[in-house]
Each structure stands twice: as structure tokens, then as C-alpha cells.
Image 1 (cartoon, rainbow, N blue to C red):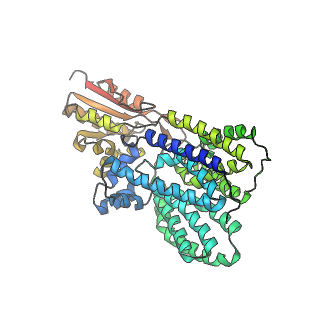
Image 2: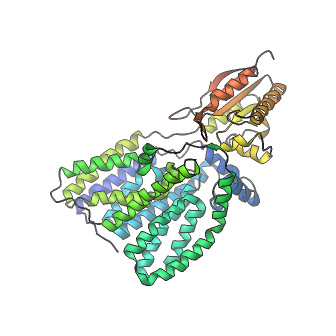
Image 3: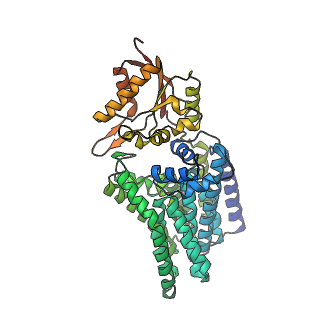
Length: 497
């Protein structure tokens, strides 16, 4: 099925293997495997902390995905932060292997060897491989589903068709947006299939669509349940361009191609146009769908982790850039240049870490004084109207995961934009005064976006509110976070108490 087999000579292959080993070792040494969990990961641990019925209910009610990933992680034999991260590491490795085999199927063995270097430097794959979130399992489905389709078209064996739809459903039920991998299936059928197979595929697709109905119903229910507070505002054109391809990938490919072009002796031409078309559909088609969907729903769905399902397309496209060069010297120079840029980027990469473990340690060491906590979860804005204990526990999950007692925590919304929210905050303030002379104010200071309005920083609003109530607040600690101090802890004393 290969459109074109890229054949390296022995020296080129040695250069590539050395580059892969060096980047692989550097990546293993720099990826933060032992670290504090970030906000959404602590929610994952809360979802699976109950019994099986609770885990199912929490996943359906508090997460915009199906329970599939959460129930699978609940069965995982290893516990603790790193134990749960190990599941994502395995899923990430499986995803990478699936992409490798896809490149091998379409472009040949040596092209697949180069794809290993691309996978080791792909920031989206690295991120999902170390997060306790559904993206890692969804990526397994997105990586293997098109591969099984290619194998079915090549070998005509029913098992590959069944596995194709099974892994497509895994992608869908891990994260609903990962179903966008299916936009490439018609391209695969058109270029590598034939009419005699279309009926069998149509029957399988119809059955898969029926099996998707529970997820579609859940997605519609969740979209109606979502509030007016948004993660991010609708993206502009600059945001669209920024996430079409990872910026470092674009820069590496561009400069490597320029350097290699100076040394090549043969013409540069795109010949693997079928694979090129497939890669473009995944990269640009998926980006356009999420970009316009963001404007339709009034909330940004155009986020890098929601686009990680395009991994096969990104790697195929990047491999095709190497295929432009027809002589061994140009290929070796391209590989060497790409290695140089990738090594610099990998060695200097700074990982953003929300240090909830340090914040929780500060709380535990503070003589059990009350804690007023804004987690950054958008469901916090429902607190004035939803008094359920389960919502309170969900919003406190980052501190609960690291040993802070729920009874010590009062969760609050990030702003007082209504009479009910103001009353709720006043009630929390009054209760805190009755309990102790001081309290800790823990704030996840990421911006909140409201429909029709700009961003709101919860830190300034909450501090201003409690100071008006009679508190004197001073910064207690910023934690030990890398990149930026997102989580802030203030010690507040009630004046005149």
C-alpha cells in the first residue's frame, strides 16, 4: 500500500538512530514524571475515589466525557500519583506505536523510522502521556483506528474492520471531540479502497453510529447543563493559525528544510500526494471544525489538548517534508538540522506545573484554621444555587487529594456577579469569623470569561470582597510552581477580632 518507500543508506540510517537515541534519552530525563497533579488530574482521582456506581455518576455528571476512561483507571492495579500516570505512559506508547505503523504502512520502513524522532519531540503526545486524563486513552483510539482501516483495505480481513470501528468508538467514548479522527476515513476509503468494500463499511459504520447514541445524548445533555462561565473566549484568527501545527514543529521543519535545500542535488517534489491530502484533512479539517464550533457555541473548543487526536496527521505531514529531498545528503542534513533544533527545544523546555501538593502542605501545616478556596473549576459559579455536598467535594478535590480535610474547606465562586453570589460569599465570611480569627484564602488565579464580557481575575475580586468584610490579607506563599505562580495562598486576619 506504500505510495512511496523512502530508502536510506547505511550512513543516513545511523545518523537517524543516533538522533533518536539522544532525543529519547533527553526526553526521559526532562519530562516531569514525579510531580504534583494539576487541577483536572485531581478531579480524575476524585471521580475514581468512590465505589463503581459513584465513579460512573461522577464521570457523567461532572465530566464532559463518558465514564469509559475513569472506570478503566479505577481498575488500574497501581495507585498513587505516579501509579496512575503509568497508565497514561502506556497509552502514550501505544499511540506512538500506532502512528509509527501507520507511517510504515503508507510511506515505508525508513519513513517510519524518522517518525520515531518526530514522536519523541511532539509536545502534544508528551503532554497526554503524563496526564491522568482521558486524552491518553482517546489518542490510542485515534492512532489505531485509521491503521486498522488501512489494514482491512489491504488484507480484506473482517477482524481489521471490526477493530477499526472498535478503536473509533474508544476514541469517541474517551473524549467526544476525538471522534473527529473520522474525517479522514472517507479519504482513506477513496484513495485506498474500492467500491466492492463500501457496503461492508456502510453496515459497520451504521452499527458504530447506533453504539454512539448514548454518548451523543450525554454530549447534548452536557451542553445544555453548562453555565455561562467559559474556560477561554472564542478564538480569533491568530489563535487558529497558532494551533494548526505546534509552533516548534513548524519552526523545526522550516529551518531544517531550508538548510537541507542548500545541500540537495536533486529536484524537490511532492510525490506522496495521497498521504499528503490525508494529513491535510486531519490537520486543517479538524482545526476548522473546532474553530467554527467555538464560535457557534460561544465557548472555545479550540484548545491544544482537544486537538491531540491529529497526531497521525501531524507526523505524516512532517515525514512528507523529509520526503521532499530525493538524495541521501539532503536527507542526512535535514535529519541533522531537525535534531539540532529539537535538542535545543527539549533541553530548554519548561513544564508548567500547578503545585497543589505544596499548597495543600501549607494548609495542613497551618494549625487547622479555616480555608476559603476557589479552585478555578467553572462549576464554582453554581455554588449559590446548588448546595449539594457532592458539588462541594468536587470543587475541593485539589486539596482533598493531598490530605486536606473537607470539613476545613469552604469553596467559593470566583466572583460576585449576582445577588445570590454576594449572599453566598457573605455567609462564608460570617461563618469564618465565628470559627477563627484567621483564615487562609487559596485562589486559582486563572481568568474567568463570561459571555459578552472580558476576562475576570478572581484574585483581585475575592481579596477586595473579604477586605471589605473586615479582613487583612497578605500573600502567604506562591508555592514552588514553574513558569508562573497561578495558585496563590493568602493568610487573612479579621480586623478587630
